Image (cartoon, rainbow, N blue to C red; front, side):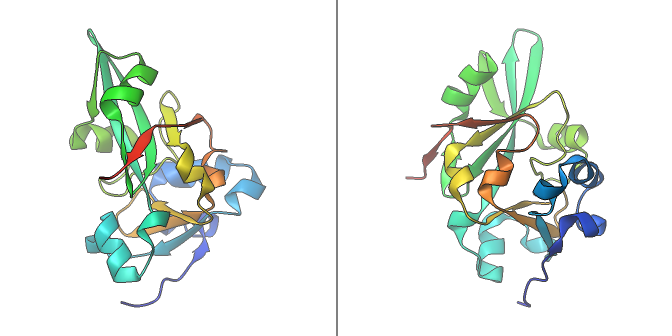
Length: 180
């Protein structure tokens, strides 16, 4: 596989979904300057395949998961950011944080339609303003985290601590548990 060509994400709008580009523009300049993007093969966007093909550490990869919490007739959407080596506690911690009776992964069509991003590339940057953004505390300690760019054909690299500085971000201890 060819080497990754990292560029400042702000100067590469073709490497991010439209809502991500808008959100990058709205970030403080010092925060946006810490986010890089690189084009990848869209067929390798899934975390395990990407890491293997591009020789990137699974421990630095973060996944952004769209969750739907339901209480009665009300559905609340949120995004959870967890390391690829962990699993979000959707039925416990996430459900309680959302005040929902039931919580589950949002259907793919809903996640794509509501975020304006591609499935397999959804990222916490550029989410709808009324969503909660729950970030597992382990993610904030990663020196250079890898996450989706809103499209399958690119990835973002940024310090984990930058994710905690995003609008709506809530850092949560115990949001995820290590994979067995």
